[in-house]
Length: 274
Image (cartoon, rainbow, N blue to C red; front, side, top):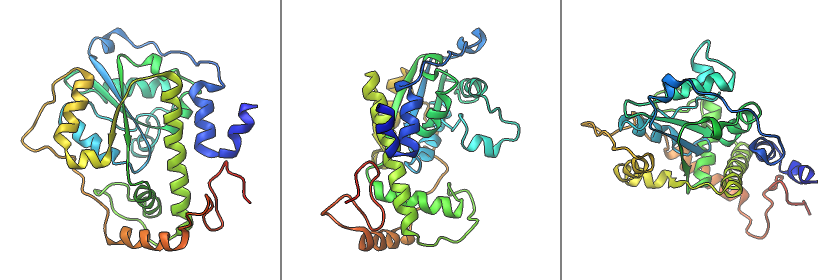
């Protein structure tokens, strides 16, 4: 059975594959009120994974009038806003209104794990008016995993936040974060391939190198002109520092083994342990 094949991968991938309609009936489509529809020109879904630079991109997009791509479906909204709705249909309406710029472009940041949960109750792509897709990844996957492991430990996910605990090296947490990121990416790649959907591929590194060019490309995707202010910035600073570099060196010294998929006591799930 396909389900049994997916189960060994565990966690995000198995859940996302089921939630992304490979094995489920399509959930209902949300009917958008006419007064909301009349204000919308296009939508941008930033399909990504944790610590991919999505917060930085969100800030840049907001400053250029390209929507407000926050985690409208669960995630930080539930933590930051008391009374935030838990039903995906209500969250969708918040995304189309509060996530919309004056240009008429709404934007949503979405992890594969969040999509998997939403897909249980709402046919999101069919409910969204005129959606466009941006596939945001990070070329340095190990750096992404180190960043996520550190953020989960300190609970500091943005440079504007304070740390709640000192960072302590944990190779197992980095390996786990790397595996979850790989599964998130695989879930998105499979979903786009399965549905034959076009998307704009961007990396965190590209955005860092050419933020103006990246935003122009996103604006073209949405069919609008970006709104340039006096300062193009996200309001965030790079959190990467010497600690990340030290963790990378320690992790590679412990886990590097080009001879197999296994690493230490762990192994990439889905491959049999010898």
